[in-house]
Length: 349
Ligand SMILES: *Cc1c(COP(=O)(O)O)cnc(C)c1O
Image (cartoon, rainbow, N blue to C red; front, side, top):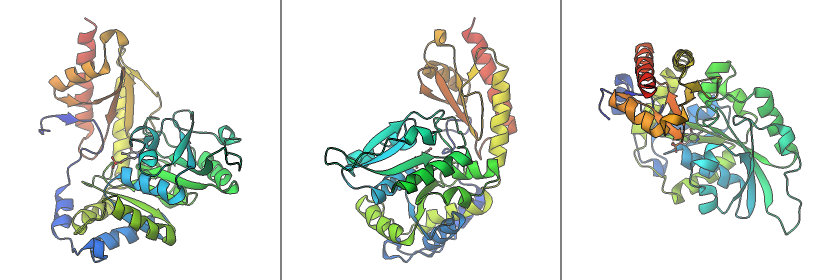
C-alpha cells in the first residue's frame, strides 16, 4: 500500500522503524531449529520473564500460537469453552477442529466479556456420550468486543472456576500489552491466572512478524514439537526475533499514545451525527462505528474513504473498524476525521 494512504485498517500495518531495522540488521543469528539462534533464545527468555512464566516459544503468528496453546491442553474429543465472539472461534479457520479434533462450547459474552455465572453447568458429565471439557480461553483485549479490556476480577474468577473444575486456562493476549498499559496492571499479573498465554509482536508492538506462547517448561517443550509439525520451525529466526526484542524494549509504554489517539478519533466520531460508535466505550486502540444502513454496505463507505486516501476496514455489513498504531499520529487522526465528516455529509445529500 503506497504511503499516501492514511492506514487505520489494523495495528498490523506498521513498518519497522529505523531503529528496529538496525536491530534486525545487527542481530546475532544461528539455526533456531537446532536451538542455536541466540536472538530467538533471548526473545523467548525475555517474553517468558515479562509474562512471569517459566518458558516461551517464538512462533510465526498468533494463529499458530493459539492453535498450539489449545493443542497442549486438548486431545481429539476434548472440548474448550470460549466466548462466541473470540478470535480463536471466528478468525482461525477452526484450526482447533481441523487440525486437533477439538470441539467448542461457546458462551455469549457481553462485548467479549463472559461472566463466571454463565459457565456454571457447562462442564460435561463423565459419561461416554459426551466430549470431555478440558479448557477455557479468554481474549484480552477483546478484538470484536472493540478492544475491550476484560475486567481483572472477572478474569480471576473465570480462571479460578476453571482450575477448581480441573480445566486448563489459555489467554489469547494478542493485545495483552494494550490491556497492561491502559490499566497499569502488569502483563505478568494478568498472565499468572492462565496456564498458557499467547502474545503478538506484530500488532501494536510494531514488529513485522511473530508471536509467542508462554507457560510451564514442560508444556513449552511439548509446544516445540507442535510448532515443528505445523511447519513453524524457523532457521535464522533471530533476524525477526531482534525486531520483537526491540519492540518489547521501545514500544510497550508508547501504546498509551495509540490509546490517546483512539480517544481523539472516538471523540471526533461522536460529533459526526451520521456515524455511531459501537461499542460507545473505547478502552484501547480499536474504534468501531456504524454507518447509516440506508447508505448501503459499510464496504461501500470504506471504498469512498479510500478514494480520499483513508483506509479503514468494513468488518460487518454496517460496521467499520479503525485502529490506531505506531504509524499514525494526532495529525493523521484529525485528517481522518475531516475525511469521515466529508464522506458522511456527502452520503446524506
Ligand atoms: C490478530 C489476532 C490473532 C492472530 O494473530 P495472527 O498473527 O494474525 O495470526 C489472535 N487473536 C487476536 C485477538 C488477534 O487480534
